[in-house]
Image 1: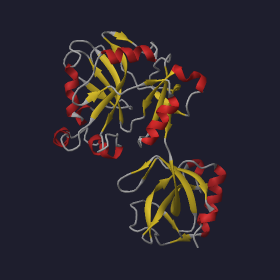
Image 2: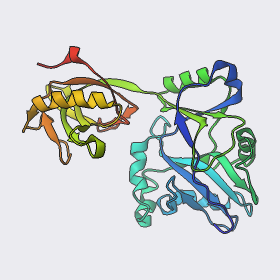
Image 3: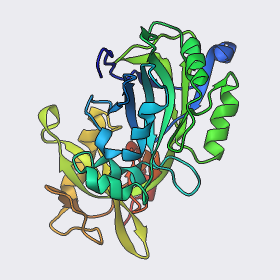
Image 4: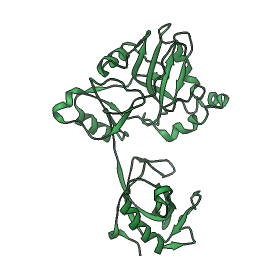
Length: 316
């Protein structure tokens, strides 16, 4: 990475669509479900890929190494996301995870590239031909990126729609995609910072779940439930679907703590027993509603968040 500046990726805040009156000042991109990746191409025939944390992940993705030659001797720093696509062509984080784990096992990564190929979707250019672009507006950077015509067997530039945010949001929901990212056309790139100029909207689903256990909180949450272990009834059995540790207010945790203490049991109510260390089991009576992004192939909830108790659905 000789002579290339290092840029931690800019991050988006969670929110909703911009006001309708400002719609034409924003671009809309499909939210991806992969591993954030900044690619460094010094123009000397090499490439280095770095994750959001700055870790070198180049070895995990040998099919992306050919990116080193696409710009010739021009230097560049490109922002994007490594994804593994499912049968519908949607990014699938669960499918990508085994590849992410191979950063220290390049031989195994080479063997897996045919079974679980990845693609690098490039959505920003931060440095090009010796010049930093981070202080240029998003619209300028986007034009520069599209001018590079980065289309290859394992990389491409996804579309960005200017205006029509409601249409874009509805389309991603109808297609079963994770969500939408809204970016102000006049926004500069702020490395390593979470900015309200980039807004992510995640499509969420809800599910009624039964609480079968809990994990104790730490620090200021000592003595309170830190996470609830929840499941759903399937064929008369309580199947574990995950641990929910966010979405609670302090009062919520206190109320839940009282319910959990009077329902304590030594018997795990889930079938099969989940591989959770330090769990406290409870009689499966308490029902709540959680929000989540999607479910894995194993049925576990991704990004679950507690929404509310459902006393009307409490089990006897």
